[in-house]
Image 1 (tube, rainbow, N blue to C red):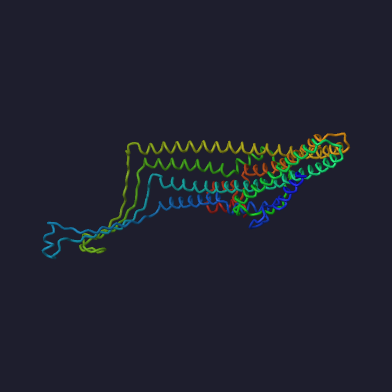
Image 2 (tube, rainbow, N blue to C red; image 1 turned 120 degrees about the horizontal axis):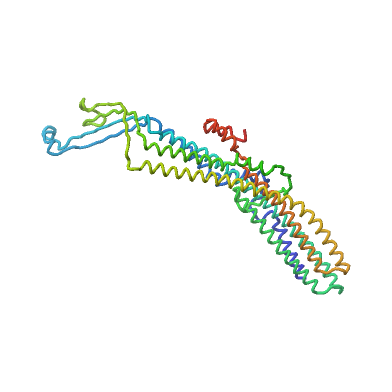
Length: 463
């Protein structure tokens, strides 16, 4: 009787909390997969960090471009000059010092700096390209994370149902065993073993409920909702045939994965840094114009000789700098080599990721069919074991074993469905299926010489 009371208590508690969250939660929100992805893209902090990197790269490009323009500088000095040399001034004015002010306004325009400005502009532009693509990669990663976490909730809900069915089945069996025990047709050991199996199933049900609550909190964290938000989800894990081949998936990934293309832009950026470093071997030439005035009063010339201007060219060439430029060039070449290795490693990782997720998808697809049959067979086997036990020709161990196999078969089936759907989402990410920016089209537009704005517009998947 005490085991029946325990069962009622556990089931009553689960009904109170329900599979949609704990009682007393502040808010219940209906959520679909599309809603989850949208909220994650809007609220996720990783995406906001990547967006800040894009903004920083844009300002770096602006700085590089503005360095190739006119600069204006103003220099001023204000002094008091005294001493024995100014004795005559003291006698004439009664003052022990003389005021002296000087102002100079200079305009400078760089005419040639050995290719440094071009290298800086190219490097900054490639930095913007890479930042754009890394932002898209962040969005694709977050889309996968939100999708996988959403599917995790569906999986946990399925496992709650499996374990709830197990508890219900074992409770019914325990009632049957108790009835037969009261009339003396079964031994006390059958009652005890049935009670133990029911208690184990109840623990599994509590664990499944806890896993569900954790999955809900995890998704809430990803999509930016309060972690105690109760989610009302009506979707189910389903099987949808995936027809692409491994070769097609790999080819698409190499041409469209944003992090792979961003690694290529990092190589271009490193090459531009080498070109910039080589500018140290060459002279610099600037056009300069200046206006200067000086006198005893601020911004006013007191003598004709103190009002002057000049315009012309200035050149500077450090034809020997003790090997500093050579060291900078070699350091930049080393960074270029590193960028090339990173790009090659990234492409290898892309191929491995695609192959891994594709094989996982195939394995899960096969397991769906296998476990579906296993569930049907396990259900039939359990019915037979029950009938045999009730007729007195089977043992309680046969029933317990059949019920355990049925629970395992159902768990394996839902796990195969979960693995299939998450592997499909992971394969989409591994291939670089776009969220907002088509990386392949972005590369095409950039290589055609389009500016950053037009390149983004051309690659926008929503246009």
